[in-house]
Image 1: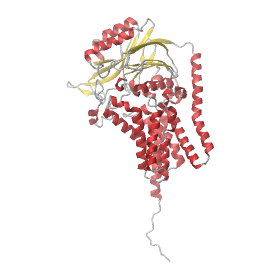
Image 2: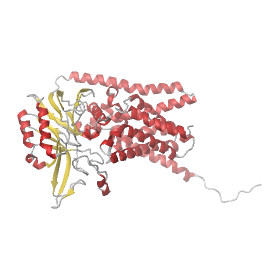
Image 3: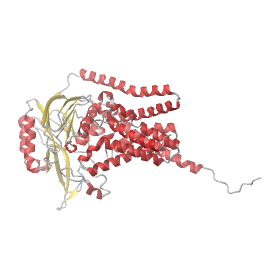
Image 4: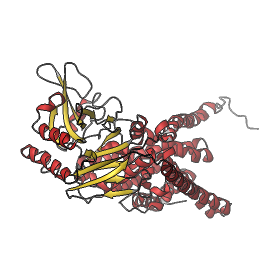
Length: 544
């Protein structure tokens, strides 16, 4: 049994171990396999000591708070208030998930409790990625983004497979620890531990070989020459200074011209590179339009670039529509814009919006939340978004326009792949976070999207890192932080449709469904004994 000081020490240790395992806040990846071990030890001690469950909740919250702050402290650079809210809120929902496991073990049984933990955690991550407070950044499966050779099987499971691996190993580690303490079945438990650790590694090795074989077999793979631009415009002091708007856009084209050749088929530039909000129907009248159109025609290439755009409607379209004085409605967007040499401009609006910055969660029901919006340049408040996932049609094939935060959503990118995207194109502006682990983590997570979809990925980031990632998650080329740069490289277009892209996050989806029933069953076991308890007889006992 643990005393109070030992419980606090364990919860602190768990949080530290977890953030040290996470990419670029320690990058000691193997530690993730014991990150939850201290909490499992605390939970077992609380249960056996018959302490109140609130004691466990306090320790889990402390552990996850340290994990959140340790991995995401850089959010403070964008917004102190937003960062504090994110730390507290994410720690709370993680704690509630772990608490559901504890209640299941308490009221249903020990064995059933440990079996429920993977369902609860996978279900939690899935649901946390599909509501307006979505934050998939800290999914446990993301930990392996810097060890892509370990998780080549993500093409079948997505990030949820990595999360499942982490949870199972942590549970078996705890059982091995408990067996060692009690000196019972130690050999058998430790053998099971090595099996659950090594089996996915061997599977990854085999899957990687199989993927390389399939690529070598396909010798008729179409390749295109791409130019990736990193203009390095300071988002705090320059990007939204409209007196330099013309010069900013001219500098993007000057950088591109250094690498553009007669073979270039695609140029990509960062998120909101065209930073002045303009009406999409009036794009041809924008001051920078002629220079972009002339360049595209002269180079005979496609240009994918980020832009701040708007549309005006006669009727309210969504909760993001804002009323104008003339009775019409306006919506602002964070958009991908594709210019082709042979057709009209295509716009695709960002679908996965950053809570508190681009989207005020549930402001439709709590309008006061709109006043808490974070100003990170540009429009303040909820932006409009696409109702359906879209891809873009270029002169050479289909590409997936992925704007910033969208690159962290596995199923979103998977659906673009299912719609026929042959190349993943990420445009982003990570300059808000300054020189911190934030932009490095963001670049690293993109490697997992490449594996899940077995597509090449090119990435244009305003201040870095821009780069090229192959279909096995390997980094082929990357730029330095906070330096203007441009990359020219030929990349293959791939028509592969992986199991994950075709069916989505089966593990997360099924676990979210099952975990609800597991929790309801656990609560019923808590309530039922009170109903089944025999009533006391009102007849006085006669003592003889």
